[in-house]
Length: 585
Image (cartoon, rainbow, N blue to C red):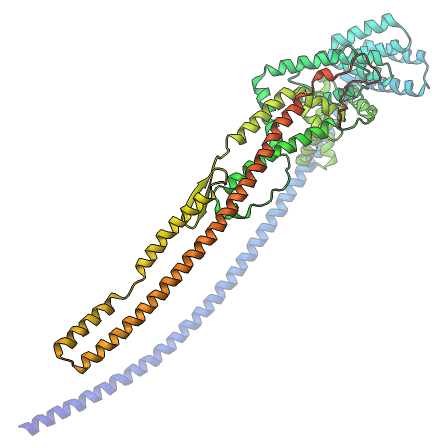
């Protein structure tokens, strides 16, 4: 029975082996087929990727073409717009020229005549009668224009026709008082009629609004200070200037703006370079505050030097003819209010033609170069502060500007002094590692070194506690000794006891060596800290001296500024012109 069973099992195993071989063959065949299919799929994927890449390239090219077309189309549209703008501007110029000629043609003629008269007076090539004949007819055609009566008055003045000159002058003042006054101020000065020029200048100053002054007022005040209009023997213009200041002093916002401007100006003055405090910079958390305080205090000296540069500057002879003539010509050539809108449109059309239809460029040019004499108005405070910043201002004008603003400059300067003094720190911290302490003047060096020594002593003691004989070695030695005693001299216990004892002796030696190193480190650390503390305190003492010296300059600067006043104006002295500000060395 067992033999049969073995045969059955043997046949079964053979059949299984055959089946396994058959499966292996089928799997091999299937693998070969699948590998071929996978290769085909992989090839198809590569082909697909290639096709996708080609399509992507086509899309990219198409996008480039679209972008290029869009750019060219936009340029085409802009070009059409520019051509339309040019065509429209050309048509508008024709219409505007006709309208300007129809309404204001005589205005332009008046301007040319007045400038021609001034030039003829310079050259002496035109007779007085010719001047009279050329101007009389203009009055009939310009019933509102302010410049025509002034032209008649000027012609009558040249011909010694006082009644007509007075009538024409009154009419000009009625039509536009400020412009008429300014024009005769400049004309009289140009013709070297000093008394008349100064009278007109007084009238012009009298009619100025200190809140809204034209920028050109700076040139007039500058020329006045240098005596171009003659000496202010009765202080008339100075009285008017004081009235401006009195009015402005009652405008809180204007005064506040001026004082803030001077505060910022003082704060921005350059100072001498500060030597770096080596130890304070490393070991004081307050170092940045110390630097800021010293820089602020050193500004006192810079401000005093700035004032000295102004008040000790030598007088220079400055030629104002070009600047005053420029104001006169702009005043004469300036378009009147009722024609100004048409002139602006005309100028804009001209610029559109200049830039071939590009309205944006035309508008930028228009905004940048449009000039009208009585626009861009500022306060008299701005006139004075501008005088200090402009290089073409005369030394006399700068002195006057500072004197007139003196009270507000002092207020701003006192605010500046108070601002940094309020930030003053009465003591500073010195920090070394985790130790920190304070000093008020750098004299408590001994206290600080003792404080650091106490701090370091605590660290040293804590380190000593951590440096001791290994307790485990002691435990082993006691254990082996006990074993040796109990065993009655067992050789193994004896050997182990001796080894533990030797190890303990070595450990004690290492502990003593480490404690000695700690002690040396402690002494060196304390010595180094003492050196740092001494140096930091010495630097702090030097800083205090430097700060106190710089801070004292504040009082000297105030005294220097207070010594000047508008009373320094000369009186009844044509030789000295206007100001007596040449200070002693």
